[in-house]
Length: 282
Image: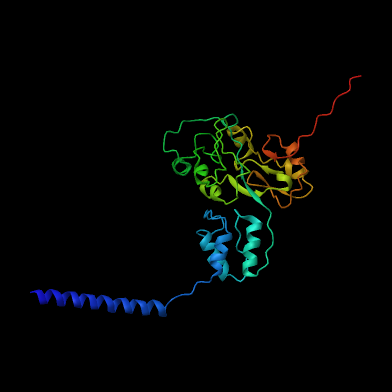
């Protein structure tokens, strides 16, 4: 009986050793050498792993960048141009600098501008709410106010304003990773160029209903009148499906459209406030 146990142990030990040697040689034969530049690139990345670059994280970005013939399809929005310069230096590539971007909330449907028509008592999720019905206001295009975008932002750059009921972008924290744009089921958040000194002009509305219907739903809605497009000397504004849109690559920040908009749907951000001229009544 004792000899049977001993032989069983010996056989199992020998079999284990044989399999170990077999696995060792197989691993040695099929070993894939990893490019050391992947580690170098990962070290200069911000480590946010936010997916804003379009890849599953900083490591995946580094791996695909090493295998790519150039960096045309690679850009880290969190690290920006400075990080991309370091990546390019490691790979011996050249890059074209990109204008910094920021998330913009294209909805001005505040509680005051867009009164509620019903009360939603379901799960606090914009995705769920959008799947159930058009929303608790008369505008079927605007912000649903549940804050899916806030939860998606890994940088704390998108709090909800309790007064307006809308998300507010903190430009100092926004990295333009695009997580909020993907999280919004209504598509009201857009990435736009920050503009010189942070100045930019955009239509804060996505309502595609005809003017009268849009205005009835929200007092600050774009009504598709086209007045803004007529005064734009740079052909930066188009009106399609009853909605105006400003191309930030063409906009020269003249703000003529802002003054022309009858509903205040066009917003000018971060422009200096000019002092009012004193009136001489003498």
